[in-house]
Each structure stands twice: as structure tokens, then as C-alpha cells.
Image 1 (cartoon, rainbow, N blue to C red):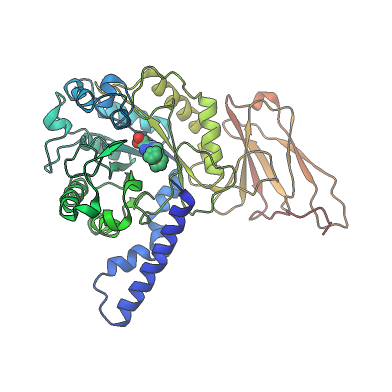
Image 2: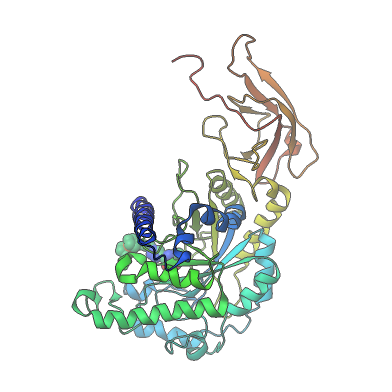
Length: 458
Ligand code: H79
């Protein structure tokens, strides 16, 4: 998907919606104050605050694809397995050892502030008790139970926000056009009646999920197969927000979402969006895939995480549990390591804002909300000195998070008659080093002021 276009669409759609609402207001018939509320930037900002502060979420891809350990939904779509063969997995999805309290505890331990679980992937298998058809783990697998509600209950006990992943695509539904990569059932333009049946079906499921679980966040996927008009994106947004005006909706609703979702791709320059979230796998796959041992290390995950936060984003880190409800040890280990790092260094990440522009410091940075504290993330081994350029403020105090270490610094090359600040050299002793990423906390004499010029040249 072209994310840039997507965002452009988001803002143009808002502009168009704003204009439409202004016109309706003029003719004196604003039927829905909600509509006005959903597009009011101030209310969106307040709705988004927990998300902006949360920084870390855990994504859970649980589905029947874990039985064989194959690609979620795409394996039959891309004809790596027959549809019948894929659906045989229903018989092996047991959730025998599903322990939602353990899952929630692990998520808590990782430091994450929200979790997003698949309620239905592109294969159309609902992970809850849908009344809209019979294709659910409740009706069609030995698990015979809804897995969403018990997890949300356990997460909420621990103050963790709950997200519902929902695939707009449903390659199993007989009235959905798409099926295999090279074959589809029909074209929407050729049979609007049939498409309408699918529309009532998927929108019915969205209403069910709203009513049953009241998600704090909706994570749509697969919007690229149809247009906003075809999905009725505006109506879908309305359905969700009329049930809970504070629900956050991700940006995969053809222009009607609240935030951007780059997938498995890392921004190099800071994205211009107000809110964005990098979703990323722990190995190379979303679902349980025992043949995939390409695990990212804690160091890699922590550096990616701090880089995302430094650039104003969140990380939504995925795990893929087994069909019996257990979580692979490698994923448990990495979440615990990440959690231990967050325990030592979380102050520099949670409830902060993205850091200073590139060039001042060669690494990620964040700022306290009042911008009087600057956090520097130092990756790997430190060779004595860390440098900072263009800082106009006086540094009151430097500490290393997770240790009581106070650091000394030297200002180098400050010329008395010049307004241009000198360089800051911070002396970091080896013993202060964190196992993964060391965080230096610089308390400034006031809100940060930076010099970013060319050294007096024009
Ligand atoms: O649930 C996980 C994946 O199964 C799902 N999203 C994550 C969270 C996912 N769906 N698609 N992709 C990942 C990759 C998307 C590829 C696409 Fe395309 C490129 C969609 C549109 C362009 C390839 C070409 C697939 C369809 C056309």
C-alpha cells in the first residue's frame, strides 16, 4: 500500500467532510454532533493521548494457521495449501492450555500499555462467538470458546488498553468477491446485491465486537481490496464511534482512520504524521511458524523501539501463540528482556515526546513533555565520550537511567563573543553502561533551545 497516498486521503477526506459538515450546519440541520466531534482536531487529540503516551503495544496473531504453523490466511490465498487443507486446521485448534491471565501478565511485564488481538483474519475464522455465521473457533473447533473476552478482561485488570484486529477482507465468506490470488467469485460492479450481503455481514460483526468487547482500539486490515465507498468506511467509523466515541481506529479504513501503520518498514526520517505505529514481527512471521527461527534479538528490538519512539511513533510488537494457547519460549524471553530494559529505562520512553532533529546527536533521543529533560539513547558500547551539538541550554545535571551514576561534562569550543553554543562532551564510564541501550538523562535549565545553523556561515 502507498502510505503517503493513504495519509493524503485521510487529510483530504477530513477536509471534504469538514466542508460537508459546514454546509449542513449552514442549512441548520446538524443531525449528528458526533460527526462534528469526530473531526474536531482537539477532541481527536484528547482521544489519542493515551496512545501517544503508550509507546509499546503487543500484537497477537492467534488463529487456526498455528495448527500447521503456516502463513496466516495468505497460505491458501497464495496457493501454498488448498483451501480444504487449510480449513482442516479447524480440527486441531484446541486452546487446551490457553491462560489469558498468563498472557496479560507477560504483556504487562514487557512494559506494553496496549495489546491488539486478531478477532478475525483474512481467512474469515472468528476468534469469538459470532452470530453472523458458523465460522468461528467457538462453533467450528475443539477450542469451543471465545478467546477475546477473557483476554480483554485480564488486560483490563492490569490497566492495559485492548485492541481488536479485524480483517475487512474475508476470503471464506461466499459473498466476498476475493478468494485465491488468481481467482475471485465475482466483481462488485457486477452484483451490488451480493456485495450488500457481504457488507451487512462484516458490519454486523463489527457491531458484535463493539457490543461484546468495547475495544479501545480497532486495528483494521486489508482495506486495499476495496474503496472507501465500497466498504462504507465513513459508516463503519460511525458505527464504532457511536458505540464508543473514544475508540481509536487505525489508518486502514481507506482514509477514515486516526493514525498510520507502517508494516515491517522502518522510517529513516521522522514521519510527519501526528500519530503512527510501526507493527513488526519478532521473527519473520505474524503467526506461529516453528520453521522460522530468525528471531530478532532483544538488542535489535530495543534499538528499533527507541528509534520509533524517538521519531514520534509507537511499536506494536507481534507474537504468534500456538494452537494450544501456549506462547513460544523465544517470545516469552524477548518480552521479558524488553520489560527488564523498560524497568530500568522506561522513564525515557513512556509519556515522553519524540526527540530533537537529527544532527545534534548521533542516535535516538526523546524529550519530556515540557522539554526540559532530554534523553539520549546510546547503542552498544560507549567509548568514553558522547557528543551533543547545538544545545543552547545550560545542563543542570546528567544521570544514567537505571544507575545512580552522575556524569560530568565539558563544553568545548564556546567562543565568548559568539551566540553559537559550544559542543557538549559527556564522559560516560564503562561501568554505567546498560546491557542493551544506555540512556543519559540531561536536566536542562528550561525548555530546550537548539542551534541548527551552519556555524555562522550563510
Ligand atoms: O496480519 C498481518 C498480515 O497477514 C497482514 N497484515 C499483518 C498485520 C498483511 N497483509 N498483507 N500484507 C501483510 C502484505 C500486503 C501486501 C500488499 Fe498486496 C501489497 C497488499 C497490497 C499490496 C500483494 C499485492 C498482496 C496484494 C497485492
